[in-house]
Image (cartoon, rainbow, N blue to C red; front, side, top):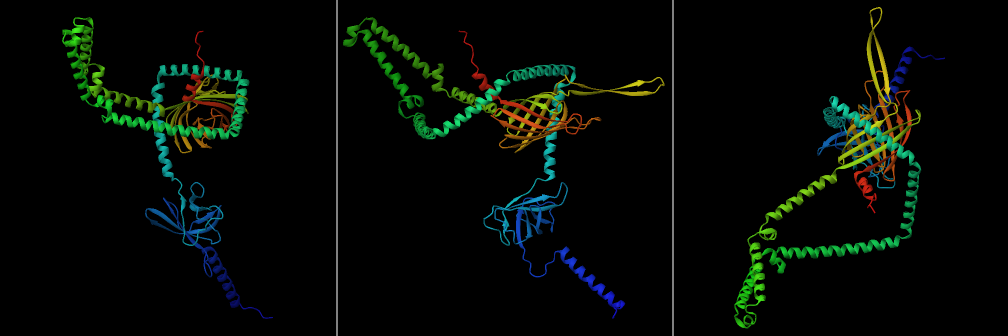
Length: 534
């Protein structure tokens, strides 16, 4: 039997090693043997910072290609991607720059469009792209919020500083606690009536839905009639505007009376002639004068015409209210300026909104209730201020450390921790809203903290996260996650998990609340019947 020599064995080993090395190079380097069947797509991004060549292109977490080139064109980053040809991506597909984890590398994610539409081919451009916000932009916004929070805390320190401020705050907290207790008692005593009101509202909405479906033709007829009335009212307004324009141009008798002095002079001349006729009649001139000469009628006519003449002279000289209105434009200008100022004040008042929010949460694991009443002052749609008080069953934590000298002469520390359950907590926060996300910060339950609110379903669903009570040696920071859902415009329900980092104080909770705006309160106050004393 023939045996391989040492040289043959070495040669065979080298040949196998070269084949393995070539195979690994093809796989790792992604070389293609034969014709490359992939296609190239491009996409433009506002900012491609951190994106590099040869990073993955993924769909639903699966790699389907690689970034081939990144170029700058017309102030935007144009990214070329080589992807598989069997993807059948639609022209309404979306390309997004993503990040692997928090600080990972960036890659391209493609979200395919609707099925059945026109597909992208080699060399086409993905028209829809999205660039996520950079960390620098978020840091800048957080810095602005920090400056606002600092201003709020300085203002609160100025208001509540000193013994007098502390005493006033204690009195306010006491009054608010009494008001909260009264509201809780009122709700507890009238729970059956509130349940009946909610049921009646549900029945009423069902009846309205049934009426609207049955009377759909009548409602359409009413809308058509209303449209016709609106057109006729528009025509009437146009006619009144045309008349006002004619008066301003001095056309017609009223226009001449307002804008010209000719008619007024004619009236004066006529009155002068009548006065002359009266004089002749009084002196007995003419047939009529002979008839009434020396009579009382002529004297009365003369006195009347003389009075009329005096009035017209005063008007011509600009005396009196009518004279100033006709001859002087100052009064009209002052009236216009006054109305303009009133309109500005009314516009500012309409922009400012005030909301009163009260809710009670029942802590399931602790078997206690937590009540909160807040006053939200909203000068703009994207900014508001929050002031309120909290009745927390866990109370306010205080820690007192004293030094005690023992009989041996050494000093020891005694730590006394108490939870004052009768003391109220207060909120003083400022919030800024960015579309569906609201960032707020300040004083949360008598300690510094911040929170995030995310709104969905046209603000009908709110997801909130709050954190406060930092720097405690024995307890971890207080964290709370809440979900709130609004119904019947004024009422909402809450559910969440409170203080879930501290084992002895964590608890799930469920709650109910209501929120009224200043317009709602005005409507409710106007609907209350006023006694007439009969």
